[in-house]
Image 1: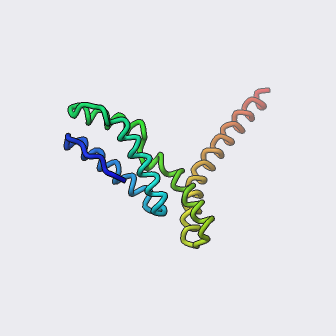
Image 2: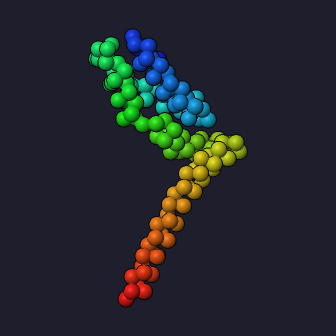
Image 3: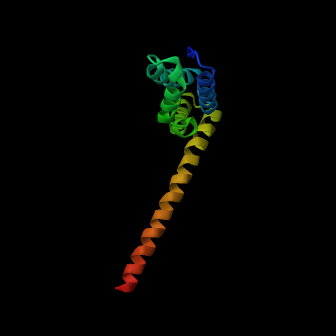
Length: 132
């Protein structure tokens, strides 16, 4: 991935910080998957910031990075999916354990939300039946 160089040092710090966070999120993936994700994100940033004035670099960069979202939130499902694919192809026990951890940890959160909704609906139904 070719790094984008900005004239404004603040814009450069924001850009570098964002991609450090991205690299931290995708560090467990294979090199080809890392490269694909980094190039895709970098192309979005590049397309949004190519034709702007140097005095507006910070504003446009902050705006596009907010639209892309926090890497920790946005990339987590993609990393889990890519790791599952890698585990399926390689049958490496380490990759399988990492894929299971990433997918189960996401699944537990969804399971807790589902159980909460079931409890709310059940109690609501029981209240209505009791009043009837």
